[in-house]
Amino acid sequence: MKDTGQPVIAPQAGDRPAGDRSAVIELRGATASLGSRPVLRSVDLTVRSGEVVALLGANGSGKSTAVRSVIGQVPLTSGDLALFGTPFRRFKDWARVGYVPQRTTAAGGVPATVREVVTAGRLARTKLGLLRKADRAAVHHALELVGMADRVKDSVNALSGGQHQRVLIARALAGEPDLLIMDEPMAGVDLASQEVLASALREQVGRGATVLLVLHELGPLEPLIDRAVVLRDGCVVHDGPPPEAVGQHALPGHDHVHPHADAAAEPLRTGLLS
Ligand SMILES: Nc1ncnc2c1ncn2[C@@H]1O[C@H](COP(=O)(O)OP(=O)(O)OP(=O)(O)O)[C@@H](O)[C@H]1O
Image (cartoon, rainbow, N blue to C red; front, top):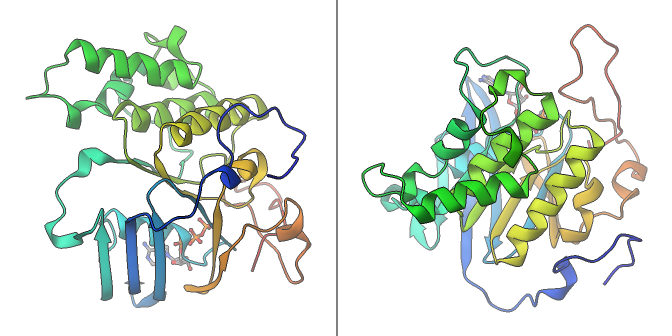
């Protein structure tokens, strides 16, 4: 196990045996286009039960498209996808999957409360949409995990960007997913929220969830990550141990323009894999 200088609270990546665990996500030769532009080019990506995999790459390399194809939002033009061993077209068990999309800066039009948003993440687990005691407990636990249990009655529009992101993550956690997919969960999130999210994720890993994360840097999640898959121009160029904490920024030719910077501001260059 790496000495990260951080307190060890829950299992770290190296603690979990690789074994021959079953594939939770299996993408084989996946090709996808957006408009006329090929965005994924024969991507192979396998995530096994209990693994935490980071999907890395420069802006526009196809990371979001890859995860959106896994949840069926972007159709594959060729290749195969299976979830929990079931071919995608027959897969119905969406209650097992939690998804946190890439954060947008657009304010929501409907002023939902924190409780409403997080409860929405539990609906697929309920019977006929009726919340039982266990459902309410799962919603409360998810809110506690992200440190938002005292804000249940607040409108999500009243929250900071980091708090808003915590609520979206709580929504995904409320369903107690076996597979958690998050697209840049730390982007635009303040340091305090990043720490809260890292510990929430640690709890998920501790209970055996499988996790696929799109990241532009490993940051505080680094100790949890088993494997990194790096995309470049829609192709997998690395599938193996995660780059060292500063390694990805140190590699030659890296230049990542942060996607969430204020459009009017000078782009923040973090130097990620390109
Ligand atoms: N709706 C769309 N129509 C056409 N092209 C698109 C669309 N959405 C994304 N693209 C293009 O597809 C490519 C891959 O985009 P994608 O969002 O998957 O990359 P990414 O690696 O997640 O990038 P980022 O780090 O900026 O989020 C980019 O060149 C992008 O401009």
